[in-house]
Length: 156
Image: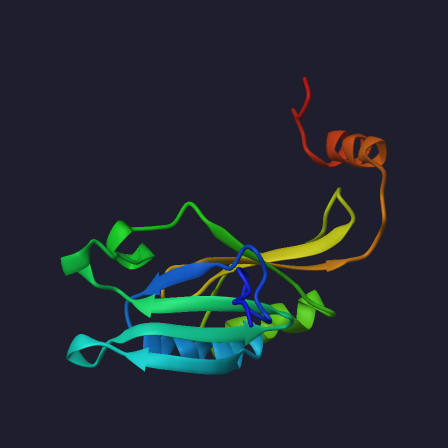
């Protein structure tokens, strides 16, 4: 039997994030995003060397910070240039659930020019999350037209 190059249940792209306090992050993601823990591997000093969560139909890998090996999370870096995007059935409820679990509201849900109702939160570990529910199918031309209406100074 040959080994599959992409393991069963995995997608070709899986976010792998670093959290200062991975065990606490796992508990937060369970409360905020209904994550299901697939397992964790303990590492040195009681830290988590590897963990796997499932949020919706997608996997999320995470690990504790290990500065001695160059592994720094967004708190150490004073921010993140990355946003993890999560489609949900009800963005308003998901946004409230995340904030109630301890996330910081960055952008409350609003109807956006591309057809999604969309909001953003920052989790307690410094990671940025966008939450969205798709509301309207739109052509690129319709999106461009709506963007011009909703975004002052755009395209001028």
